[in-house]
Image 1 (cartoon, helix red, strand yellow):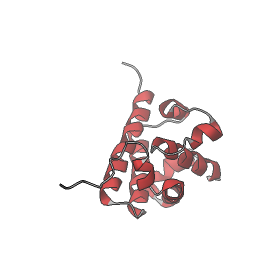
Image 2 (tube, helix red, strand yellow):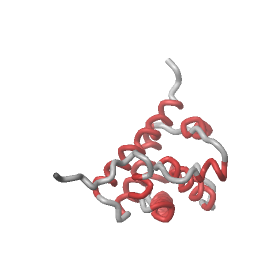
Image 3 (cartoon, helix red, strand yellow):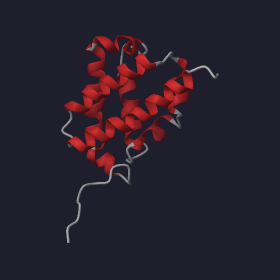
Image 4 (tube, one colour):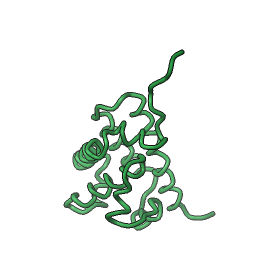
Length: 140
């Protein structure tokens, strides 16, 4: 009898653990914003942020902690959030979505995550990114 010891991402805290807990998530977020600061296709989305990214880094790390099944740090520190509605104050279309996902893909690639978790995480992050674009499209 064999058992598959691989975690089932998206259940309990398996994704949070695969990301390295809050320390691993903060490394991912730091790399994400470092890429956003220097990658030309991300220039437009970088301008949507404050010059000092300290709060943005903390908010994203706290959000990802809870979103990945770990502690709900965002709610504890900042209250509840609807990701698509939060982003309605900025014009986010397909170009901005692609730039954001491009920064995240590069940041994920820099992490010591397993290849299957890297694929899983980027697929999952595409879901809210798509929702943000849809919320901003005019009803028709």
